[in-house]
Image (cartoon, rainbow over all chains, first blue to last red; front, side):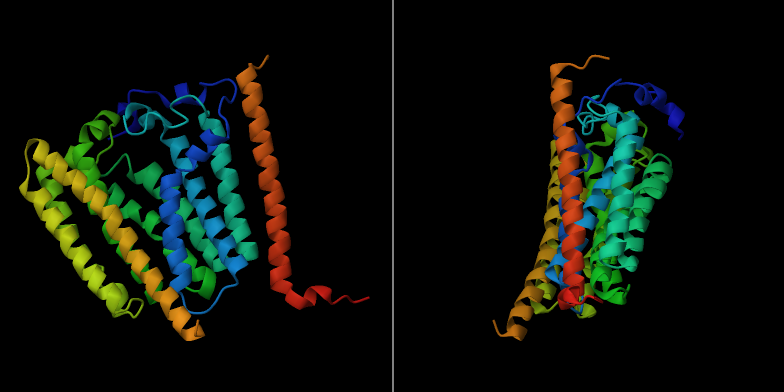
Length: 316
Length: 46
């Protein structure tokens, strides 16, 4: 699959608006605020569960830099993917395809934010977390957006690593290191990403097909995708318990991870069994919605456990 | 090139946002410097 199969020529978009028509909200939308909120939350958990302490001002600075770095990735993604975003219903209203922001402006905006966030994190927090943030932005732009997304159905399997880095960056902001525990948090998001996006791709496959993106339902069909979702969900269930095994989570986390993992697998089985019509679409939508809740809930439980532990230790 | 009223308004709001962002960045560097130096911020060689 090559870029030439796309209906819209990139050069058309490069030269479209003569003058920037966008206001502040358009530039904010370039940063993919909904994705950014999940990044902030998982990074916060990484900061809170890491051993050691961080001054609240430094912690907030780290979170701000991670958030801006994630926003930079979003803007750079929208610059590069403007041609396919214009074709897909889900993304057609983004600022670049709508002509509110030119691709060149999105590129400049994203680059300034990326360089600024990495340098600020390095100067004000530490250079290990800054290096991880740079790796995250680079991975999302060069490996996922530019290389994998339009070429292989494994795009979100490998590209999912970009979304899995934030808790690791948060951890590194506190400890200045990368350790087994932070890699476990990375692994949890990494294993969660494929079933999450394939559930979406199942009911958006026409969109992806029109845009020429080789998502698994487009290249291998819906049945193969359902099988992959089930396999990954069966792996994700036990992976959810890994933070408990390495001592990051307590009993509350273990119980929550077991229950939520069981529901995830049950919904994946439903997706596997319901293959026709509206029932199939509903099953995929339900799994997609639940997958977001699953990740948020697991990280929220980790956060609550550590906050409560902190209160007990300080005798509050 | 003559800008429309909306373009002028948007340019002004973008300029204000950039100014706020730069001011916030300067404030952030100042506050973090104070936090990192702590009481040592008062130590002067002269």
